Image (cartoon, rainbow, N blue to C red; front, top):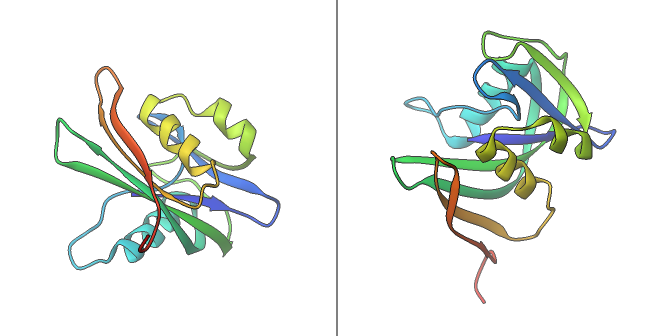
Amino acid sequence: MAGLVCNENEEILLIKSPWRGWEYPGGMVEPGETFQEALIREIKEEAGVDVEITGFIGLCKNIEKDIVNIDFSCKYIGGELMTSNESSEVRWVKKQEALGMVTFPLTKKRLEIMLSENNTVHCFGFKKEPFEIIEERDFIVGNV
């Protein structure tokens, strides 16, 4: 799961991962945690900041493995940027700048969806090597 963290200056939080380069913070849910608790903890561990989850953006599944990624929008509420063993750099960047910094194909696709500001939930299935979208669709929330 991951969070698109925005601050009061309309900037988003990116971390530099030793494995995938620039990306948004996130991680795995541990036993006994809710999705929300896990995301808030992961962002604090990787970037040093406190956030409030403000929305649900979408999800995607690697169809070759049992891995589902869940994406949320978050608002920065405090704390100082700091690195960790999962982030060699941490910084606030303008949204358009972020699109140029993120190069890992799956991470870039998810960031494009996060920044689209749709009022729908975006779902897609993909293959990782080589990266290929198998199916994708936006869903309206609620009854229609």
